[in-house]
Length: 381
Image (cartoon, rainbow, N blue to C red):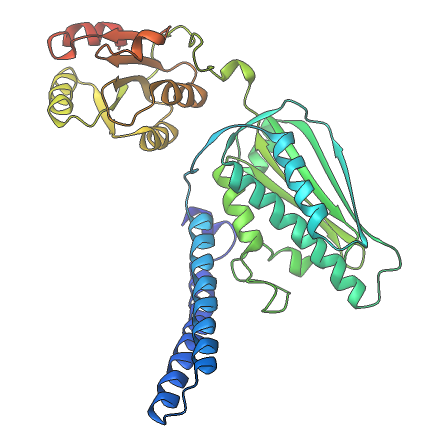
């Protein structure tokens, strides 16, 4: 809800969603009714059946895509997050654009972010960039169709790194620090102020129904904000548009490399302990012990939940206990992602395994059930 409130009221969102799904259902029902009617009359031919079934499948796929975009727009978690070379993500997507866009559109790239890393979903960041670029292409095509394009279409893609000050951070509601930016400028039809003020509204579009759903920029908004970034838009009707999005840069010093020593464990800065564990018996014992010492406990069953919990409670979590025997848990990857989110967090591994012997810079408790007091001492709470 917090995300939706930034762009439009819940009422507008719900009405738009209901309208789109109502259109989808009408086509499905109409196709099914025609099949039934022709069957009752004995007039149903094989080619008619194929046509109506194709209609149902096509519009159902549109509904599935709509749901997928809505989930991206409304959620806060980042699926399949990893450390990414931002420039490579952009350049790989540009290669796709060159092969898809009309030949009368020239694409120029000016990149100045070599080696810059971000933490996020490769697919989603590519999708956000792709959505913006497709909008630029559509704006140029529209200008050409209206006879207003007196030269080739032009799309300029630029990347750079920028320091976001406290003042800027307050304006864009993000954390201060270094951000990497990709901007897409076009000489398309442009927008007036009224249209520009509504581009992030879900289901708002100036395109024909067969071209746009009104979720393209809403999806971009959801992706960028869930990655801790922000978006800027400049446009002038008849002249063109520039859309840019910024994502926080991950310092190379904050990236523990697999097989290398993780940063020396530091004293926890919070009074809360997070435990990553599926073993209910162990969880119960740890919970009882730590709570008897006045320590708040948060639990996570896997890496995805652990990242979410740490994201939401970063200020107060000082120590993380990880059950090394948790099934399907890749210790090195988990530690790396947790350290990226909070480099100072103290990590203690419970039980000694073959994998724990390969990880340096973390404490290992071989028998946590009988070494509870040592756990408290190591956590330095």
